[in-house]
Length: 391
Image (cartoon, rainbow, N blue to C red; front, side, top):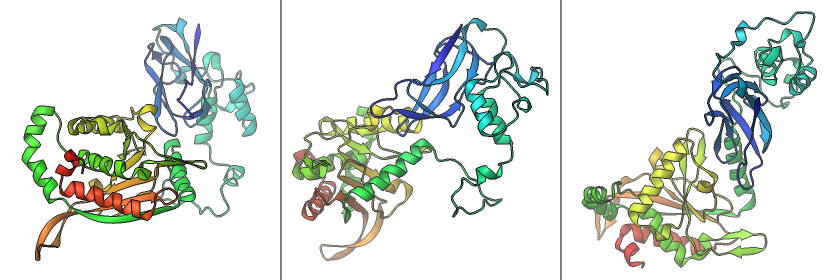
């Protein structure tokens, strides 16, 4: 009995995904609940489990295919049980004069690409030609002139020492959202600098006892999250957004923290950060960061943020202009701490300084509010007791 493998519900506003990779090949044994195929949406990756134990009978959507919710990905032959997986290489070749039975998707690809079905090795059940067989054949086949003609006229010829890879769905979505922010928002950036002396001293004084009590290291991010919340409460427009012709001011503080991963930049959200302690903020950020690097973030982790903080300093950035994360209206950029000569009470001293940047949507946030917000963050970091006293 064949059990279908279908695309599950992908979450709110997500209706399509790209098949990233299959973990099994046709003919291999599978166990019920075992991850079979990885789907990539424009927000997260999703693993689809085997619906039953048996043998992977067919792959109807090979890697690189775009599929909608409910689409057929493949099937598992439950009757095969734990029988030894047939090896495609051992299958008898189809007679040259006759084509093997062709599945609808494979037949369409054969006709569109003007191929000889009999010349393509078939690995499907009962010698049937699958869509994956055709895709594999096309990948090995030199590109024909009509395919090359599809490239833009301005595209330069590929060089021998270059590699061309297809953009992932996540990377394309990142590009779309960043361009959307530039095209939609009246985006400006204001800068300031913060003396990290007091915060570094506080961190060094309590880091051991903090970790011993809470089981997590005290970092800079929890202080910046808390400092930002002080500023957001005082200047609510920075925590707002534009919805059509309405201005939406939010009285909750869900702070997005940008995380770099091998797949691209993602922004998981620390929910109700104003209600969390410093240790809870640090733990939440650590957990979200691990999930991001492991590709385990869910849609709930990535949606609904009201304000974002990005720390380019971890990569050595001295100064940058962060891009808004729509529909949010503000993003705070942290940077590398670097000792610089500063005049303090008439004396020139070496101080650990960090440049701060606030990019904001001028349609909802005035320059006065943006500058004042950044000054408030600076004051809270230079005198951390302000955060506890909310002043």
